[in-house]
Image (cartoon, rainbow, N blue to C red; front, top):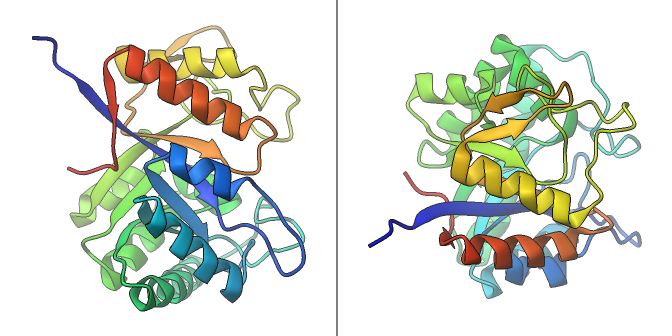
Length: 256
């Protein structure tokens, strides 16, 4: 009998704000296995958080906090000069806010995944990574820390004894050092759904990704990220689910 591989598919959701609508949450949540819910700093607000938690629970999706920089104008994608202590505090604050809504709706916090610039900075900055990992550990040591595969963030979580998930991206390109191509570069995003699916299958089944420099980079794929605000997000999710099923890969929330 062929062993079935297992992988989590996560999506950034709850990123609307007030009268402004962003993303395809209703269409995406039935297609993924875990949700990263914005906590009001880079996107989202209390009403959106409550609605998104309910929607995720209705779809049987694992619930995660998606804390970012307090930067609505820049959508949390601008690098901000924060100290490790400030990063710890803003992460604790946002996890606490989302956890309150999850508890009120009868759910359980499954994971924490930093957002945008905070995520990318923590991937390469050990001091910042340690602050974020400590924030997760002190608020909920049972929560899984999602971080860029092989990054300083995952290493910091492992050092503290947290459950960690190495995350890969369906719709982003990679550099030969294993980091994501900066969004400031024109080739940062993959817009062809079939190219994205091929990248996902290689990462999951072969443990490799082709970098922008044309080099295969070893990579661990515990969870696959889809960006909920992407133009092709729903199509990506549908194709990825279908192709992974064909490849005998089972989709379910991450667990150690």
